[in-house]
Image 1 (cartoon, one colour):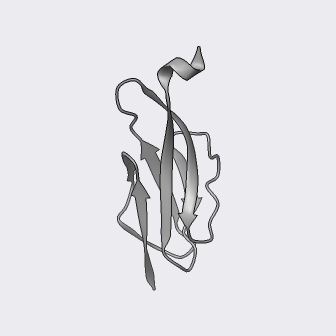
Image 2 (cartoon, rainbow, N blue to C red):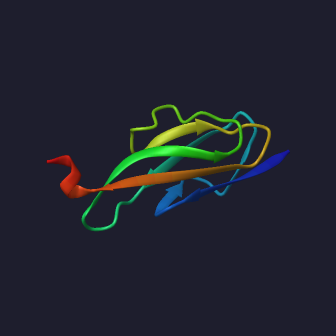
Length: 78
């Protein structure tokens, strides 16, 4: 069975739908003046392998997933 996932906040995934157990790679693209901070799973029961890595990977569970990329203002890193 195929399940859907949604990646929000200026991010992309390497596929549009996935089968349970399949690896999905997500990549965030920060806007000018921002840096990628981390991934957050908003809906679904999955774990992003490294929440602070960009890109990163998660394993598709047997349910729909929503993953959000979070960013911080570049000045916060000084």
